[in-house]
Structures are given as C-alpha cells and as structure tokens.
Image (tube, rainbow, N blue to C red; front, side, top):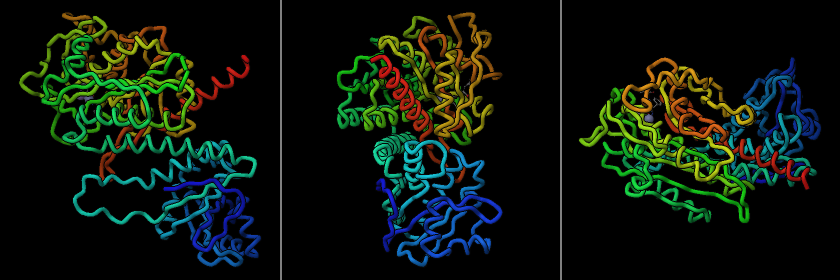
Length: 504
Ligand code: BES
Ligand code: MN
Ligand code: ZN
C-alpha cells in the first residue's frame, strides 16, 4: 500500500475521508468530523441524532453522498474519549481500513492521525502504517490456484497538522521500514520447513545483506565445529539439513559504538528429536524459527530507517530431527563456553542453539544482548497468546523493553529469574542439564541461558512461544516481536541522541 502525509482537507471525487466519532450519549465529533459536519450543514449530526453512529469502538458507517463534499465519508467509532488509548487507536484504524477495502475504495484520507489521539504524531503515523499493512497481509506464495484479487485500497493519506509535516514524513519512513521487517518475519515463519531450511534462512540473510549493504557471514558446519559450537551441532546431527550460523551486522557509516546484539532461535522444524513430539499440531513446529525471522526483520527495518546505532544479529539455524545420528537422551556435549551439557530431553533444543550463540556474542563487546526464541510450551501455559515472556536481571533494560511494549502494544510480561531456579538444572554427570522438569519450565529455560551470559552485560530473553504465530482458522505467523524491538531501538536512539546533545 502507498502512504503519504497530507495537511488540510483532501476532497476528491474518487476518495474517501475517514473521520472519528467518540462514544457519548449522542456521539461526539472529533475536530475532523466537526469540520465535515459544518461544510455539510449538519449532515453528520443527523446520523448521531438518529443513533446510526454512536461512536462505539471500531464501528464504521460509510456515507456516500455528503452535501458539499465530493468525497465519501467514513465515520469510525473511537469508543469513549476517556479510554481512547494506544490499543483503541489501533482498533479504529483497523476498522477503517477494513471498511474502506470492503467498500472498494482506492484512495482514502485518514484524519485519525492528527488531532485527538494517544501519543504524538510520530507514533500515530507509524502505527497507522503498521496497522494498515498488517490488515492487508496475505500469505499465498504456495497456492497453485490464482490468489483472490488484490485488495481495493491502494493509497492512504495520513493527516498531519502543517507544523508536524516533517515529523510525519519521518514517521512514515519508519512505519514503512518496520512494516517491511514484519512482513519478512511473517513470510519466513509461514513458509513450510521443506522450503525454509537453515540454508534458505542463510540465503535470505545474504541476499538482504547484499541489497542493504550490510556485513554478513554464514558459518557452515565445518566452521561451526572449528569455532567449538558443539551444542548447536548436537541438535543438527539428527537431520539431513545442515546447520547454518548467520552473523549479519548493521552499522551506520563511521559509527564505532558498542553494538546491541540480537540473537534469534532458528529451528526450521522441531520434531523434538529422539524425544519425539506427539503428532497433533506438529506442523506448527515449522514456526520454531520465528525468533530468528524476527531478528532478521528488525535488522531489515533498522537498515531501512538508517537507525543511528549498530546492531549485530546472530541466528543459529538447524532442524531438530530423530535421524540415525541424532543425539540421544543422556548424551553429554560440550558448548562454546566450555561448560558440558547433559541432554536429558532432545526436545529442549532451543537453549542448546542459543547458549552457543550467546557465548559467541561476547566477542562483539555488546552494549546489551536481547535474545528472541519460541523456547517453551511452559511460557504459553503461563501467559497464553497475549504477552511474550520477558526475563532479565537488568532493571534498566526491563524498563526500556516494558516501555516499548506499552507503546507498541506488542505486549511483554516479566517473569522472575532468581538464582534459585538454577537448582533444577543440576546434573550428576555434566556441568549442567538441559532440562529442569515441568514446573517453572519457562524460567528454568531462561535460567539455563543466563549461565552463558556475562553478569555485567545487560541481557534480556524474550520467550515468544505463545505470540509468534496464531493457531486455528487464522493460522499464521504474527511477526511479533518485530514492532516491539523496533520501538525499543527508536526509543534507545532518541534517548542517546538527547544525551549526546546535552554533552556537546
Ligand atoms: N519449540 C519448543 C517450544 C514450543 C512448544 C513452542 C509448543 C510453542 C509451542 C521447544 O523446543 C520445546 O520443545 N520445548 C520443550 C521443553 C521441555 C522439553 C523442557 C517444551 O516446552 O515442551
Ligand atoms: Mn523442542
Ligand atoms: Zn523448539
């Protein structure tokens, strides 16, 4: 979809103006709706008076012939003004885009981005782009039959006051960049495991690096072994698909700051290995690389919006299969950190990939590390499909990520990471076991990872097992937590910019 920033009225015959109405006893106009009401001699007031539009959140009423206007008008309910916040804005934009599309409208002017709304113009423009793009997302790459005709809505102009145009344009660029990252993450997630193999992910990273002029290195099994990442190789052993370790780096020209390191779990299919999973819903384990896909999406977005801070992305990729050379329960392997690991359950494979990647991350002297993984079913039991799990011992990082989650509505909920949870991972035969038992499974997994990160480096682990994809009739990758991480990056860049301004 195309987007633009517009100030003032855009009344054109082939277009539609979207204006918001708050819920009150008889509905209450936003500024934009009030203006249209005045131009039309109180035409909108009639609909409120008759109760045809009450402002209920996400309700929509299309008006085809408004006196004094050539464009059509779509009234969208915003709910009560007192409770009009981030989520309500998103729902209203979603309702608007859906209604515009259903009515076959090609061009529309969304007034919701200026005037009464939560947060500033940058946030509103960015979010409008993200919601509109997400509403139009389809995955039909693997369909043989011709996909249904493209959606009608082609161009969405977003309102900004005259003084806010520059901010609006910048936010438009950010919104498009983030939307591209989300789309990449969703596409990779939705691709089946026979297409989206470790090699395919590596190829995607390499192509992206070439396109956006990023540094990229792909480690093949020989190189992975030479590095000493035997925990990763222990998982890959049961599959005919070779492991890959992706290292891709975005660095603004001339910037020599310490990077943020992002680590993403890239298990392209998780059968469980010898500790085989039950058959029901096993197809969904093609989504076990969504952490890696999200990390690629974030790098894409960061490069596209020329973020002023460096990022190193590490994505260990392999397939977890029960082949003849597969790791057995009870096997003991070494890790890059030097710690030996007793693999009691081959289905707890994600932590084996991640522990080596976290150790590998040390060489970049990270300013902070964030890993993203579909790590545990226990996290889904704890938090359902609403929030991703957040685990960290760094209060500043916890605060910053929580703020980004609130702003993006890509929700996080923090679970504890106290030392006591580490007890469960004791092994009589190796330095550590890879499972701790059913209780507190999401936390013991995080606790396992914590053994591979230097205490002094701020580190957070995001368990996206419940949020990376949807099951049921709307089955598909969500692209989470790309938006969350991009908000975190933008917010971090802004804060550091302010600090630099003060220092100079
Ligand atoms: N990829 C799974 C986690 C998962 C399961 C995500 C279901 C989403 C839905 C992970 O590799 C796994 O199998 N974890 C095990 C760990 C257990 C053996 C300690 C789990 O959660 O059952
Ligand atoms: Mn598993
Ligand atoms: Zn897994």
